[in-house]
Structures are given as structure tokens and as C-alpha cells.
Amino acid sequence: MRTLFSACALALLTCSAALAGMEEPSPAVAAPEARDIFERGSKEFQNVTGAYFYFDTGPNNRPSIDYSLNSLRLGVMLNDPAGPSLLRGNFELLGEIFAGPVVEGPGNVLAGATLVFRYNFVQPHARLVPYLQIGAGGVYSDIPEKESRGLISLPVEFNLQGIAGTRIMLNDHWSITVEGAYRHISNAEIKKPNFGIDSVGGNLGFGFFF
Image 1 (cartoon, rainbow, N blue to C red):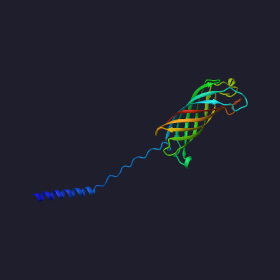
Image 2: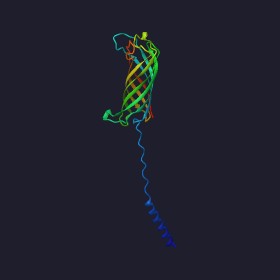
Image 3: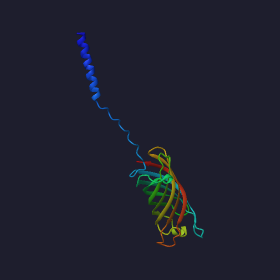
Image 4: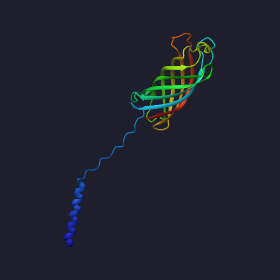
């Protein structure tokens, strides 16, 4: 009996070992790659607030018109980051709406919209992501022609901008945004006088990627 029990136990062990050898090992599950927030199709929302200060580019002494703006932007990445060394980056298209008060000089308010074309300088895993952007659009203001001495001649004019900025990335979704900016407002000679308002200033705000 003892010999039969031992033989059965040995047979069970042998079968178990054989079945174990026939089982295929489970393939390792690859961890998903982290999403690149600057890849093509990624979207970004920005909210920035800034102040702009008038400087006179003409020979006449005209009133200073200083103003503050809050800008809301929604952008989409047009391509994946690419390129050599420090120039590696991608293009982004944004729509912007803005509004704010005149804080110095004639008038009370400005408001408008801009189409913005931006180049992001994107380095892998960088916490600082600089960019350059240009934009054009329209602007409404209640700045009177007479009191502005011809700086503004129409209630709706064109607005042009050139901005250098950088994001300070807090994580894969949130960033702090710092910008230095130039803005020009004029009517492109639709009506004279058309001296225009040239302003320099800066913006501070936040961004969110989704």
C-alpha cells in the first residue's frame, strides 16, 4: 500500500510539472508612453492680464493712452515638435479675445479679437518653454478722435501684436505664463488722421493643456 501511494504521488508530481511546462509565460504589459502635451492636435487655454504703455513714434506731442487688458486664448498644436538643437519646436494657432479699461488718457475701454500664430521652443522634459508669436485682428474703443488728436479716428480699428513669452511648466497640464509685448492700433489709412497707438507692456497669467 505504501508503495502504491508513493507511486501515485510521484505520478501526480510528474503530471503537474509537465502541465506547468506547457503553460506559456504571460507577456509583460508595456507601460503606456507619456502623452506629449505639444504633439499635433493638443489644445491649450491661456488667461493672461497685462498693462500697456503708450510711446509716441511721431514728431508731435500727443496724449498718452495707457490701458490694461485681460486676454483669453484657445490654441491648437499644428505639428509635433521637431527641428535641430535649440530651435526644436512646433507651431500653434490661437484665437484670442480681450478687453480692458483705459487707465490713462482719453477714452474708457478697449475690446477685440486676434488671430495668433505662435512658435514654441520645445525641449524634451523642459520646465521652461519659450515662444514667439504675432497676431492681427480688430479692436473697438470709445477713444474720441478729437481728444486723442488723431491717434484714433474710428470706433473699430485694427490691432497688431508681437509677443515674446515663456511658460513655466508646473506639471503636464498647468503652467504660469510671462510675456513681453508690443501692440499697435490703427485703421490702415481707412480714415485720416491715422497716427495710431503704439504700446509696449507685459502679461502675466496661466495656461492649461488638454
